[in-house]
Structures are given as structure tokens and as C-alpha cells.
Image (cartoon, rainbow, N blue to C red; front, side, top):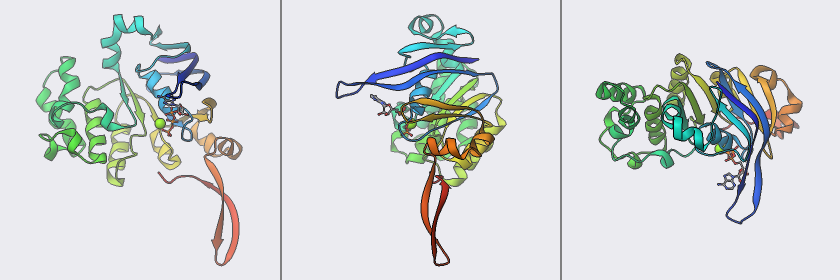
Length: 260
Ligand SMILES: Nc1ncnc2c1ncn2[C@@H]1O[C@H](COP(=O)(O)OP(=O)(O)OP(=O)(O)O)[C@@H](O)[C@H]1O
Ligand SMILES: [Mg+2]
């Protein structure tokens, strides 16, 4: 369903210096797979998701969706089909909310693509995310976690076939995170979800992609095997050595960073 061949991304910063953000990578994700995207800050997770979500274009290599190269020409011919099929949740929810009310935000995609029973659809997805009381409010007047829930409800209301989620639980409280995980597990969609949280990763998928500093793809394989690969986790800086005090004795051992 998704294929990357030598896909790479470079970008010029505000300082005018061009930096390689993703090194050439090869990747295939089949329909129905649940893949977790791991890596430290700046390793390129959001950049990869943006490329796969069609809001940025590779500077080298190819991205194929359903066997067709996704580029500007593809969007001219198949943009609507792609947007209907692939939903991207970007890391900052506020950057994706632009409708005057929560109701309109959730209804936006279904209206745009001519889906039926808009009112029932909005009511259903609002209730899934506990948003019933906020339907008349402006999304930008809500809290961070509430904004995130509006964004997720709006994306899921389209019933896309591919969900690209960039740290979807980052702003959510424990019950909302748990609820989202249950919901994602009940959906028959292809998912690629970035997270820093290795405990959460187990709930989100069984295959892992690991990006290292400099945008190198360090690993593509079973998540379980990665979580037992101390050397690789150390290389990716997802594992750290800390000094600890246990019953008056100070020593240090490795820890998975799992605080987010
Ligand atoms: N608009 C941009 N212009 C220039 N460089 C950028 C831009 N966006 C991201 N970068 C650079 O690309 C690299 C990867 O960023 P990206 O946001 O993809 O990382 P990430 O893995 O999602 O990090 P985080 O865990 O902090 O969300 C970073 O070093 C960043 O400085
Ligand atoms: Mg990011």
C-alpha cells in the first residue's frame, strides 16, 4: 500500500543552511499493518509522516501509494482520492484546526467528500472523544488535550484507510489515551504512529521503525525484538544509564525513557 524507494528529505532552515533531515530509506507498509515510529527528538519522525501524508515532497527517491508515485502531478489527478484515503494528524493540533466550531471541524472532511448523514456522523465521533459539550465552541478556545481530541475526531470521521498519527497521545490524559488506544485497536485501518513512549508503543503496533539522529532508519522489524535489543536502543538513545539510590546503595543501570 505504501512504499518508499530511496526516499530522502533535505530542507533549508531559516538560517539559509540546507540540512539533510531524512537519509535515503526503503520501506513497505502493507494494508492493515500497524507500525510504530520511534526515535528521539529531531530524528525525523514528523518529517517522514509529513512526506507520507502528502504535505511535503521528498527531495530524492520515490514515495508510492497503491503503486503510484506521489508527486505534484499525482495530486493534480488523484489529490481527492489521496486525501480521502490518507489522514495525517500533525504534531501540533492547533496548526490543523481552522473551522469556527467543533461541529464544523468534525463535519469538514465528511462534507468535503460528500459523505452521508453528516449530523449522525458528527454526533458519533464527538461522543467517541467526549466532545458533546463542546460542539458549539471554537476549537481554538479549547485546552490542548481537547484540541487533540477534536483533531482526532475530525480525522476519523472521514473513515480513512491509512492513519498517520504524530504522537497522538502527547496532549491526552490517561483515560483519553487509553480510550484512543482501544479505539485504534478496534479499527481496520493501516496505521503508522509515532511515539516516544515505549510502553505505549506495544499497544499501538507490532512492527517498529526506528529513526536515529540524523534521520537514519536504524531498524525495521518486530517491535518486541527491538525492545530486547539493548545495543540498538542505546545507539538510538532511547535507553539511558542513570545513577540510582536503592536502600542507601548508589549504583547505575539502564533505563528505558518512558516519561511522555
Ligand atoms: N521547517 C523546517 N526547516 C528546517 N529544518 C527543519 C524543519 N522542520 C524540521 N526540521 C529539522 O528536521 C529534523 C527532524 O525534525 P522532525 O520534526 O521530523 O523530528 P521529530 O523526530 O519529529 O522530533 P520530535 O520528537 O521533537 O517531534 C530536526 O533536526 C529539525 O531541526
Ligand atoms: Mg515530531
